[in-house]
Image 1 (cartoon, rainbow, N blue to C red):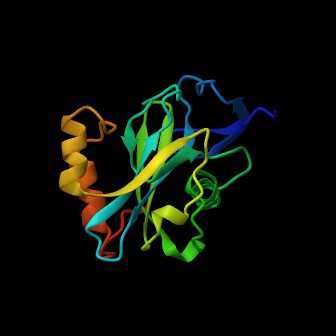
Image 2: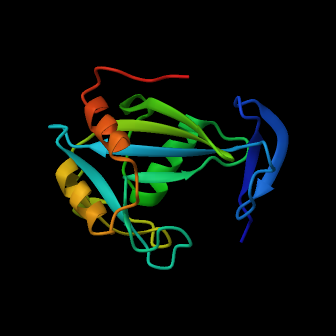
Length: 175
């Protein structure tokens, strides 16, 4: 099995030419790039959410937004999110169906968040066994109820509200 490698970036998103292996943290003062996508139904009332496998190191067995993952060395953000969507849930989307809506800068990481709108038949999805236990559609209120029960990753309510608000395509936050 080949070890996944990730590019190291400066805090202002410039590649350093350095790489780190899966499981390593970016050196102090540097970042690695993470991508996320929230896929909504065409009514934009429900998000496709996934339950993480119980053996995952982080957020084991918890519900999460549709897909998240790391950008591999040599890969771009959009290329990575398209790969992650295909790998984790087996959904076929074209690149123009996925729209960048937010870039967040945090300690040791840069997170790009994308939104897509697609009525996916969850019974026809191919879930990546190592990553995803199950998927389902959920409204914002259902997600908040899962959070209150300690079953959904602890995103800030403002963040989840923003993703649902941006699903209609009326605005984007770009770098």
